[in-house]
Length: 400
Ligand SMILES: *Cc1c(COP(=O)(O)O)cnc(C)c1O
Image 1 (cartoon, rainbow, N blue to C red):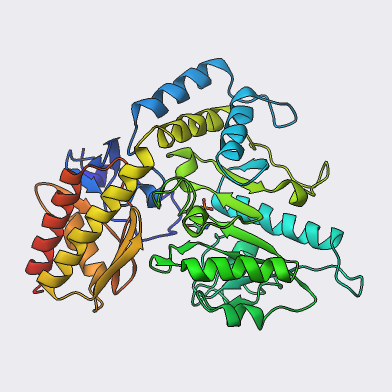
Image 2 (cartoon, helix red, strand yellow):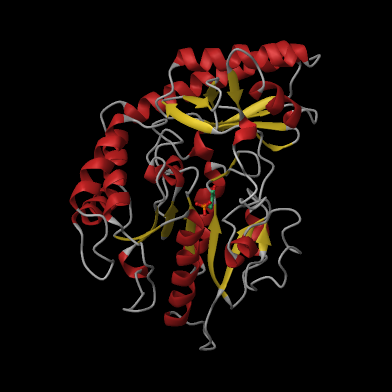
C-alpha cells in the first residue's frame, strides 16, 4: 500500500510524524506499509522491554481476553493480585495501586505525598505539600506532572502551573537542602533522567538524598517509569544505589507494550482512604495479566545479568564509535544509553538512519547533540553490532 492512500487528516497534529505506517513488529524489528524493515532502537520509548509482540505477551493477552476483560476496579481480579505480590516480593514496597500511564502513576504519587503531608503535619500544625523536583526532570504531560517536570520551556506552557514543585539540581545535594522549608513533604526524582538525555543520579547522591530525607522527615519518591523494570540491569533502578525509597512509580516497561503503570509505597506511607484514589481501568486484568508475563520473564535466572552484560557490551561499542568518528562520549545504565555527539547533528542522524535502504534504523534524539538508545532488553549482540555498523555508515555519510 502507498502512504498517500492513508487519510491521516483526522488525527491531531501532536508531533511531526514521518510518512510511515507501521503494520507489523517482531522482536527488534518493525515493518512499514511498504514492506520495508527497520531495526527499532526506540521500542515505543523503552516500553517494549521484550521487543515487539513477544509470544509470552501474545499468549497472556489472548488467554485473559478470552476469560475476563473488565470486572471493574470495585472488585478484586486475579491477575492484579498476582502482579501486586510479584512487585512487592521483589522490591522494598508493600502496597501497589495500578494505573494506565506513567503520568497517572505520578499524579498518584503526588496525591499520596500530599495526603501524607496532611497526616504528618509540620511543627506549626500546618499541612505540608511541597515536593522538591529537579531541573531537566520529566514526570509526564498532565498539568501537575508537567509542573513537576523541569523541562526547559514547560514553565510557561499551559500556564498557570500547579504550585508546590521547587526545582533542585541533579547530583547536587546542597541544592536540595536549600529548598527544604516547613512546607516540604517529599523529594521526587528519576534515578536516571531519561528525557533530559540519560543522566544517571550518582550512587553517592541517591544515598545522600535518602539520608537527608530521613533526617528531615521527608518522603523519597523515585519515578522509575523509564528506568525501572530491568532497564538498568537491576529490576529497579534504585537498587543500583542500595537505598530504599518510600514511593516508586512504574510505567512503560511494566506493560511490555500495553497501557499499564503502577504506584508503589511502603506500608507506613499507604495513607489513602477509601474514595481518595481510583480510576475506571485501574488494575484491569488484561493489562495486569500482561504485567505478570513480563515480570516473570525479567525474573528468569540470568535475565537481568544479561541486560547488564549487553549494556556493558553496547557501552564498549559506542565508545569505539566515539573514538572512530570524533564524538564526545557515551553514558547510561544497562540498556538505557546515550551517545553525546559533541555537535547538533542528532536530528539529521535520526532522519538519515530511518531513510537508509534496504533496511532502516529507528533512533531517538531527545536533544540535538545526543542520541538515546532504548532497545528491547532481549536484544542480541548481533543486533547491537548491526546498529553500530549502520550508525557508523551514517556518520561517515554525514561527513564525520
Ligand atoms: C515516559 C515517562 C513518564 C510519563 O509516562 P506516560 O506513560 O507517557 O504518561 C513519566 N516519567 C518518566 C521518567 C518517563 O520517562
